[in-house]
Length: 523
Image (cartoon, rainbow, N blue to C red; front, top):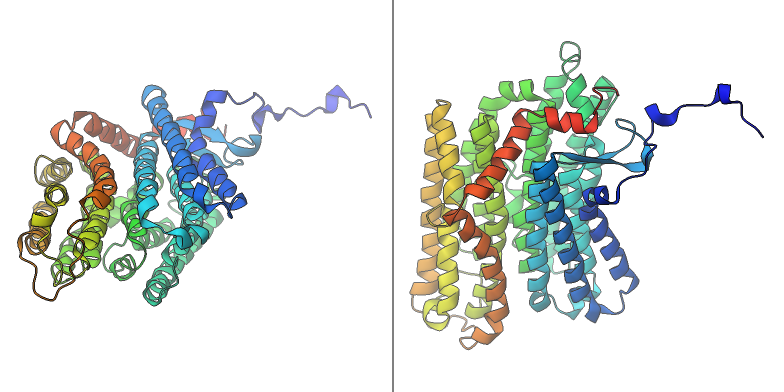
């Protein structure tokens, strides 16, 4: 039937009418590739011998995509791609800026190394139960969280990586895994429920869940809407996800139960999604509410970093010790959010990159120490320096990095955060950062002294003193994580500039908003 031109509808105001440039697909490739890879692995689920190398290829392709994405973001600014041809805020957007692209690149890098480590750590049974599909889907959820421009879509990506991580956590069905998974699931269920309540309240207040649209509309609704309540709920939900005090007990109670490569990826990646969500929501969506909450965030940061590392001092299980070190690092990152200054936020971003690398490496180190010493207990592991000097050298470097000592990557973010704290007049927060660094040095030096320098007690598990060749692959993975850590420590300028670029996008999100709405709000 013919349609009169007088009744034709101009779709240009609501839909993308021009074809998407091929280069712009790089925005969603960090999410699409792992999902596609996970689906393919499920289709060839009976060919488990292929899973490991197929997953490595997919992770490598995703790393190439995130590298290209970060390069374009640095060169061109924030990039946006909207699904379904509907223009924002109606279509769901993927927005890549310096913050999200940096986190996605670092997360994909450690996932690739984790997939390589899993070749030696995950047996045939674990592969048949779906380790590698779960791993790729977890990466998709993590990268989706870093790149989404829609608050409800952030909730969806949270669920994707939580469900995938739950599958990884229970892989093996041992009693301790079920116990750890129960604690992990309950606390994450509470956090996601609070997040969903806040999301519903925000939609009821503003009528939109597009992050850029929220940022544009939140000012007009501040007098009439319950924005402080919503911001507080988001702080609670994301703080639980990040394992901030006082709701941090679930992490060391669950991260020590799965295979060590799973613990490594959890410790390196999952809590950083909570930090990212806090940075994005508090700085871009609720900047004035963050100012009101800043003192509370600062006290939570101080308690998390100091009490977290004190928990490490009280442990004898190597995996639990590293879990508490992860918790303490969350407090350091929250300090930058509490300050809210460009320098403080740059310190948080830089520390997050460092933490993704080093926390992953620490868990993998613990796995190699278990192989060499026969136990995860500090009461039993000893004499590793004499039997495995290369392992001792790597452990010493990781102790320096985690404690924030030169010449590794942990030094500069703490220097930046201490300076930002002093500039803001929050001397007590600077002291908390320094005290947590000292206690981290003590906690990890204790591990090094007992496990490497002490002679092995009689009757303790012997481990495998001749395992140097078996540990060689693990050494290579740890070296891959240490290389960027050394580079950041020795030559921090490029990564610090990138962190400053990410921080500038948080303190002044105008470029991010203009990338979504190039013609202004409501365009």
